Length: 347
Ligand code: PBG
Image 1 (cartoon, protein in one colour):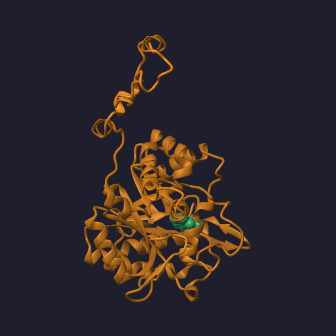
Image 2 (tube, protein in one colour; image 1 turned 30 degrees about the vertical axis):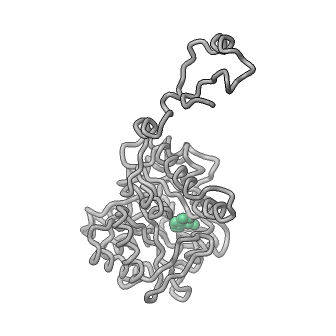
Image 3 (cartoon, helix red, strand yellow; image 1 turned 120 degrees about the vertical axis):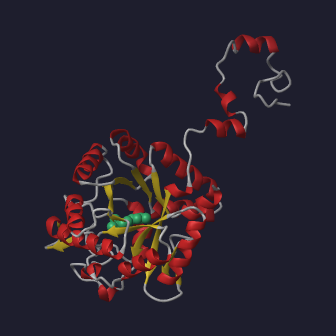
């Protein structure tokens, strides 16, 4: 019988005598003592995770009492406002008190300038108003980027095949104000245009929304892991890719540069996205800034775990938990994740 302390006994290692063993194992340091029992492991765990540190990204669409599954994201649905309200009540009960809102805009409402994003009666604005009124304790984070509204599917305005920076920033600043007017607690620019944090901060302040915060997607990489999200919103770029504005995955010093600029311009929270393949970036950002650091475990990261689970190849809930704790260990203070409710239920 191997004994529970993990020592080798004569019985389980019959080819060595106790004496021979003691000689080879003189005064060993035994880190395993600190892992002996669940109680000890829990006592010594370096990081913890609370439901309130999870931000739940949700997809809203027009209509009534409807739920549409997203095929590459099992367990995640596009829902109508009334249904979303019920889902958010459930989130609050589980201790998840922040949601990030993404709209599915009808194709006929899209245009090259994403005009619909400024409609005070648009889908995002109406949803924010409803959630704020019915669930005032919920913290509402709105996405500032053109892709859900743009007929080109890019985060900025396209002119002659290029994503034009300053014209895009002008629209994004207006969009942020419109979302603040509806009642957003935080606006979250995910577009990666230069100078947008400063422009949005001054636009918000001038419009009287100095209390509305900015969560900057500061280090957002051009990533293949966004695939399922673009399916969910039908927002994939019609031409080209996003590599001229989102970051190159070969770089991490550039992430710090982006983060420092956004902090200078007035970001309240900075984000690294995606999370799982960028733990080193999260760690570097955490080590270099004082403000909270968020990480976004994106749609493809979620899809991979769910797909492997479905195939019977991994233990899904265990992989979910491990992936989220790893992101916390790397240094993220808060995590945007489609697992928010499933994880919170486990905590
Ligand atoms: C676009 C946006 C994307 C995501 C959030 N905002 C996709 C993209 O940049 O193409 C991805 C989120 C996810 O994959 O879960 N502004």
